[in-house]
Length: 330
Image 1 (cartoon, rainbow, N blue to C red):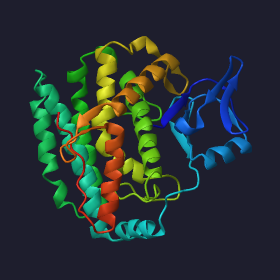
Image 2: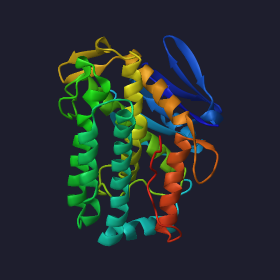
Image 3: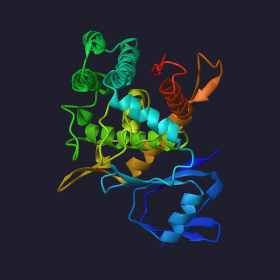
């Protein structure tokens, strides 16, 4: 099974014959070509054309993150599975407002129900979150009434705001109080963790899209434009509450990441390297966690569930089966 590789140090990625390796002053570390699905680059890393040619041939995706650990961009090798028919179907569903809305609503419904499931999980463990669950449920009832994407995005934003209000009750650490959602740069410790985790989720979904016939540039909830991939943002909405947020609760609940794992810079807060590594480790553990799949009747990992979500979307686009978002059952 292929696995992702994470590079936090500064150095150089090189190719020698049919092998890849990372080199810096500490020495060389070889990267197993046949066992690597993608490389996440957090450090200042030099890459040459020979390396990129071999990465392309080996179908290895490169994800780049900036100084703060937030997603900066992706080297996406030539699409080995892209289908002209599927691209046309994606465009058809994007350009038809009714078809686009149908899919966009399902992404928001999936996100909302998974946020509500997370809240319910902690209500069952004695947390005072009933009012928040009710507010999310009330907003959820209006999703189907939306006639435009903007209306849908507004409801999704309101649902997420109520959901974020639950974080302080769940975490109960003053040094990780939520206050409000802030981005680029995040203004407190918790927002820094959320942004970092969301970046990982965006790249995970992008990597899984690469293994399907779908084109990541054509999303449905998020507007397709000239600047970025959007389908991975759509799919990420469903899985952020299930994976990213639960990773955060675990890291803080077990005191794996503490307040002194952050430092202030001129532009915002920075999560230190040891904290990033701890987050990545917990995140990968969560992706590899297996759960009993109701339809398949066997255990599969969360990473595999993300891929299956994309297969379901493909079936919807070609008219085989109506798409319904994955809902966690904890």
